[in-house]
Length: 440
Image 1 (cartoon, helix red, strand yellow):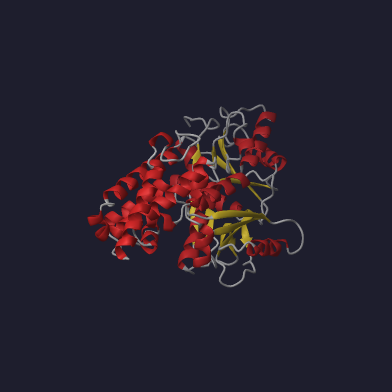
Image 2: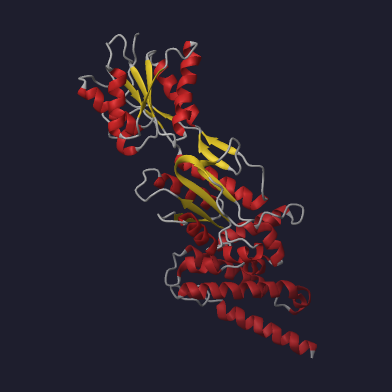
């Protein structure tokens, strides 16, 4: 009986080899596109397996090679299925999406757990380094893609995070905010779900509920402008961070990512000083709801004190609000002096304020930058790019801020709660054409 079973096994293997040993049709599978690299790889691998099978068909080899033959048959079966799907026009992308860890394990003759350790980079000290690298290389060659849904079920994670934004659709900063967050989320292996906060009572709670219904792993709360806000009503255990806003009080109550407004204002004023200006004015705004009004003036005063020894040379006028008309009026008040007394340069609270200053300068018969140099803040395209001459300004780095917020949130998701911190992202100076050098 044993000899008969062995003979039958040999005959089955020989028949299988004979069936597939057809080079003219790529081992019996008529491919629609022979140039397809995935199909070519399948066929080349099939041929190598067949060679192994032939070597092991001899009676004296069968007894000792059963395990290797079974592995080859398993691999051949997997590859046959893949090539057949390819030959029916489903394409390499569909084949790649179907590859599972067990396919890689069958190809290499190792256990699924060994493949899992290698692909999840948990192989150190547990899997032979050369084998681990071979597993990863084979996975890439076979087009393996991790099944995030399956991983999420196992780890109780959805690999999705929510960006709850108070900004409106026509906000000039929103595209950069979303772009930075999306890029960082993708890099970390997460999907970003953007949820706007609509008008109306309990709008934010509705947005939070929407996020939780999508089973997100964490939430980023983005403000419509830099301001203080209350801690949101989020269920315990759901990590969240603040973006472009801070919690009420002197110390942070949660992880906060904001722009370094003081540093940006200091660098703007320093740029004017290094251009030779000493009579430098600052046009801020009166509205208390804007935290930035204090921080940008602080940066301006620090630079004046550092370079001139005290703040006596500081010239500060506040506009009623951030509008163009308010900026224009404040500029006229500050520039209403003789040429010897009025400032030769102005640092403005925002690009919009700078635009209002430019209107005042034009109305007074002066020119930028010959009679007055100007630096703005925000780097809003519609003002800074189309300002004539092109406006030197400080950029609010919303893409980098949102990317950092994602990274901080992922750390909270992976590692659990940490002490609250306030992370400041630097604001780069964008030199253009609105500042001239002076010999004063």
